[in-house]
Length: 558
Image (cartoon, rainbow, N blue to C red; front, top):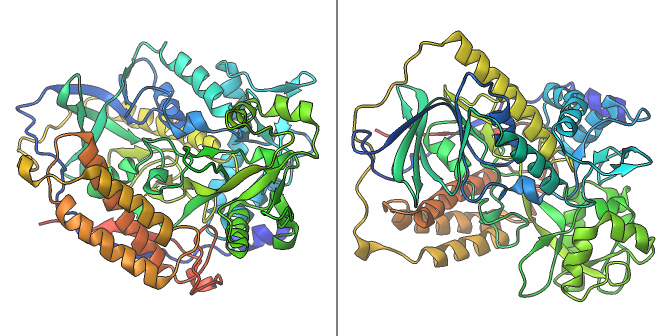
């Protein structure tokens, strides 16, 4: 298998399909004049408080100032909610070539071999670094315990607190970061827009309830804002994951790529009327079965790896079984496993399910797929640089070449660590080689004044309708007619929502969601094949002609 996967990757990708998106009706969502607002200055501005963002901040030495902006409280990020763990070759019986092969296999032909190899080979260093910084991974016989998840050929997933790895990693990272004397954190600060001038990103327009509107000027800006799962009604993501960073970068002129690829996690707890909760991949790694409403275990017939198949294959098999049985979910069955070990390994899930009167060692757990991880994002090079000078990005907001058309389980926190460290190193090198470069402040007024109050719309209603539309038309199964109808509907909403100038985050978030949804729909319409998490009913097969990325650039406004 390894030889075949490497040979396939060695063929190289076709040139990206380049698409010019229509100009956004407004370069800046809010009007501002640098002469009328408080101005703050820093060397490095990091937008986003997840693992990738803090890893960038922690890589900036004391002789440079760094400011981290978080949309909500510190720790409220997709990183914190990560359950499974971090993939890395730590077992002597495992090998880099196997981790690389597993990643390429999951990515369905769109991974970049050089990026995959670099990240995989750097993984042990980054995991050991976390341990030195105070992360307490689970142990077994005095050694770091290694779990196995879908798509992995070996047990190579380090985890913490059983099924709460993200929480433990972020605890250690934030504790260390807050001890850095050169680092400041602004919590509950919404980034309205990136400010560009003379072709370079110069800083950001920022709003919060304490400071109002202000401008942060920086010599280097990093986007680490996470994903966009909240574009869908069924999602594992926290409320902050609304694609803000994607839209910020898009309006600033950065290239976006792979926007059609939203990964749906196969197992999201489905209790009618309750919020959705992730049920980690590691449960299937421990041996759980998937059964339909009639108790039939269906994955062995759907894929050679059964429950340990890559996420896109498992999600689609679940979706097909739900349709065949006319039932809103399938079920995880752990009743054949050691109950003591299961409760020890998955304490958070055990507690969660107990709240719904479900005993995970005995009862069937109702699950269905939900939007989980976005492979699409800002196109970055191996150092985290975007196509806009002065703008870097790291983590889920990017398209780095690691994940391709489907992310391998537990490669996400790893990507944030590796690219966060690389971006920090690259920024520091730039700062040291250009020590006397002054910050250039644009001298002109930008944007437009707020829309009169009488023209406001029901923001919550439009958001709800958009999320429902995305599930129906841009979900696990797609086809031309529904995608075209979705494009028309988003265009309709955008005509009166994107033209308005709002004065608080509710409106700006809606505008970001509509902006990203529209190019996501266009990308899904453009890719006339099925690949990874992108499944077209009208084009069910993969083709060599589509072994390429789709890259979006914003049409320049006059």
